[in-house]
Image (cartoon, rainbow, N blue to C red; front, side, top):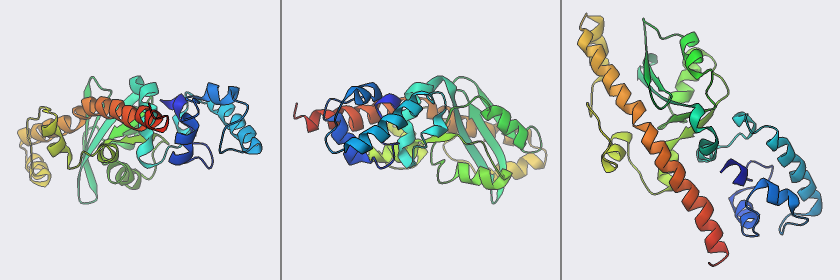
Length: 244
């Protein structure tokens, strides 16, 4: 989907992108081969040609595209093997647990044990894309404030994409809709953390199990969202515009 996208070009929004697709210009190569594109002046076309050639040299550099808001889903197909799924547990202004996964294994970073800025940077070292639920509003800005800075990684926030697909609600509610497994539906993070600090190791295990479900359930949801967004906002727009 990345090379079908034009929305990262200066001055291209959803309407113009749809108009480009409607002219049987579905990817960068077909755009470059086209002498003229309706709705785009010759001067602007030459400018976009230069931008697309630069984009082709940056296919392995997601921050180059700087997709805003709910558009980072377009990167998922290209970088699925280089994704980190992430969820945090916080109390007040303090992060007590960060769960990360590559889609297969899960790693908990726990305050006082292995949670440091260095350990988080190591977990994100090879990531080209971070998948979260509500991460653009909460997890990512919270972590940037807590640690001072983070790598410039694009964030695929499932919450906003699901809303565009007409699926609303919190993560637990959405998990039920998709019959995703969960050991603990609701926990009191503060109580569990305080119990752990008082020596109850099982409290930490419960918190980790809860966070693991938060993180690992993002994996099938991301697959679903990517496929549905591509079908809904790429294929269907082309078909409706051409009146197939």
